[in-house]
Length: 211
Image (cartoon, rainbow, N blue to C red):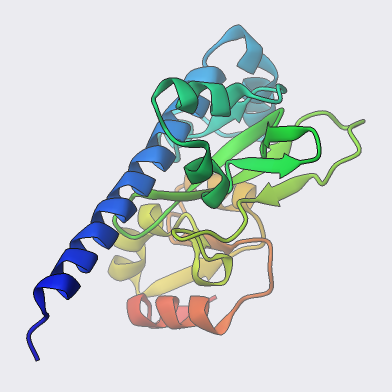
């Protein structure tokens, strides 16, 4: 049955809010990308180079760097008039008894994209080996990002998967980058979890064979 005027208005509002959230995530990815190119990002660039990832793949996957500050990306997005509540909902900022803090700090940043190549979340690889924190962290689930439904590298792999009929699932994000660097562009990875039914369903619609 046709939507009522109130239902149409609610749908428009929801779509507008979703567009705004995609814009926030894209701005965050731009910020991390810019930081990667600065002197502060030297250790991140060195780590990526040490892993054998060249400039072309680094640019294609929009690799970035989150500075080791408590308020790097949050200050940048606040300057763009983004409400702090949006940053919390999208998993860019956490809150504790001392206030808000950047969720990702001193990490190589690997944006997670949806099939329309929009940024929906991030994976972050810790740089300091002495830091008492997890080596890899992903964005928490948010209105845009659902870990069990996401595959790292999928947009970059889709054309190759369709051509060959094969999807190659590897363990980690840097495994995906390394294979793409070597010309094996069918590679994707689950988001630090066991492969889920939802991820298999996505791959099953694209590939005849999953390795």
